Length: 493
Image 1 (tube, rainbow, N blue to C red):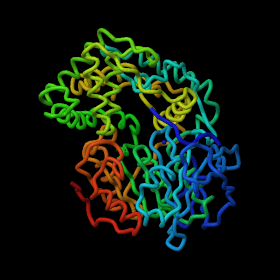
Image 2: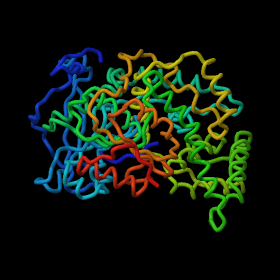
Image 3: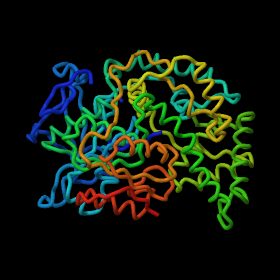
C-alpha cells in the first residue's frame, strides 16, 4: 500500500429490501463481517494503532458479478471497547481526496468520548491510490491549478478553456480505462455501504467534509436505514441538475464573503503584513495588481506555469481564502509583487499524485451530470460573472473539461429529500469561499426535518475542529458522543 498522506491542490437498477429501495449490488448485511485482513499501514507520521485493509467491490454495481476493484480502508479501534458504539467513517473532500490518514490525523483531535465511542475509519474512494487507481495522463501544463480551475483569458475569452477541455477529456478517454466511466458520487456511496458491510456494522456513522457532505447526503438518501449519526461539515448545494456546476458557481459569492474579511484584516493598524489603510484600498490594490499581471506577467522559475500572471495571483488568492491562517502569506505576496519581486512558488505534489487527483476529479464531476457543450453558453455566463464578481474574473461559470466529456452519465444524480431518519447535523461557517452559507441552506432545506444546522460566526472552509467556533465544536462533539442534537437550528458566535 502506498503512502497514505497526500497534498492536493455523482441507480442503474433497484431491489426492494424491507420495503426500502436499494441500488443493485448494495449489501444488506446484518452485521456479519467478511473477514477483513488488517495489517500495518504504510506511510509516515501514522499512529502505531492504525491498521489498513482492502474491500473488494463491483466496478459496475449494475453488474455485481462483473469485474471487481479494491477500496483501501484504514482503522484505529475504539479507545474503550466497553463504550464502543460503532464505526465513524471520515468522508474526504474532493472529489480527489482521501481520508486514509485521517484516523491518525484529525481523528485524534476528536474528544476522547468520541474516540471511545467509535472505531475511526478512513478510506481512499474508488479511483484514488492506493485503491484501484485511475489517471488521465494529461499534459503536465494542464496540471496547473489555474488550468484545472477554468480561469478565462485576460480579455475574458474562453477559447483556451474549451481547447483545454477537449485536450484533457481526450486524454481521460484514452488513458482512464473502464474504471473512469464508473466514477460517480452514487457509486462512492455504494462503496461506502460495501465497506460498512465488510466492517460488520449494521449502521454507520459518518463525518463528511466539503464534497464529502454531498457524498454523505447521497449515502443517507440511498441507504437511510444504514445511517446512525451523520455530521456534514462545510456543505454543498445539493442541486441535482447542475451538481458541480452549482458548486463552481458558488465561488463567486463565497470568495466575496471571505475576501471582505481578508481586506479588514489586511488594513488593520499594527498588522505587520498590512497591505493598505482601508478594506476598500486592499480590494482595489488586489484588482489593480491582477490586471497589471494580466498585461505584464512576471517570471516564476520552477512553477507551473513558470510565470506569475493575473490568473495565477487570483488562484493563490482563492486558495488563501480557505483558511484565515493563510492571510499573511497572501498579504506578503501582494506586497512583494507590487515591488516587482516574485517569491518562489509553493511546492507541488508529485506529478503521479496530481494525475491521480485529476483522473478521479474529472471522472466524478463529469459522470455525475451532463454539462453544456456549447461554448456560447459559457462565454455568456463568464462575461456576466466578470462584470458582477471581479475577484473571480468569470472562472466560476466557465467550462471545465466536462464540456467535452465523451461519456454520457450512466444515471441521473441522486435527489436529496426529506425522506429518512432525523439523524443529520450540519455544521457550517458563515463565511466560506468554497461552500458558502447560501448553498448550505439549500441542503438544509432539502433535508427538512431530517437535519438541524449549526452556523458558526466564523471564516474559512472546514468548520468542525478547524475554522469554526468552540460553541459549534461542542455541539457536534456532543451529538457524536451521545446522540443529543439541538432541537432547532443554532447560530454560534
